[in-house]
Length: 143
Image (tube, rainbow, N blue to C red; front, side, top):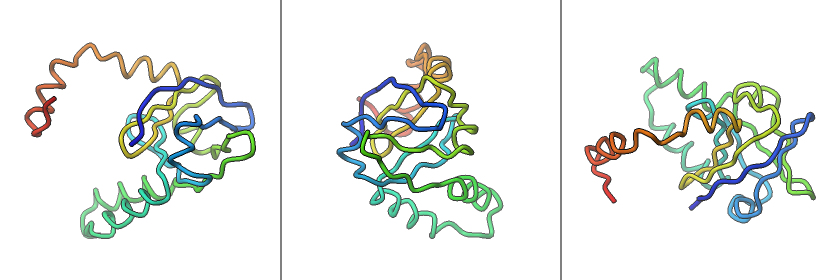
């Protein structure tokens, strides 16, 4: 399980440090793809295989399913960690997530999310958590 929040930078060449705690679970190579809410999702190879299996069950006759599958898989890239603990984030993914310099990596159960720091702060203010908690309870999740 991934958890925690780490701030760091991405250099002009697109190299970004992957926090050591995440590298321990991800291994030396893993998948980076477009995520929801304008961030990137990082999955271990094992978890990516689980996701692939789920998508294999989605009927191709559903237009939305085809569109989401393309969104998710066409942008996916296998990244390898260098000796300094960095990965090279493909330009198309950096542009999608608007990654410029300051980034935040957050652990979210089965994945790591990578956010532009400003976007992270804007989109994750948590002022509406009572309302969100009620929605989660309706889905059967309570703490």
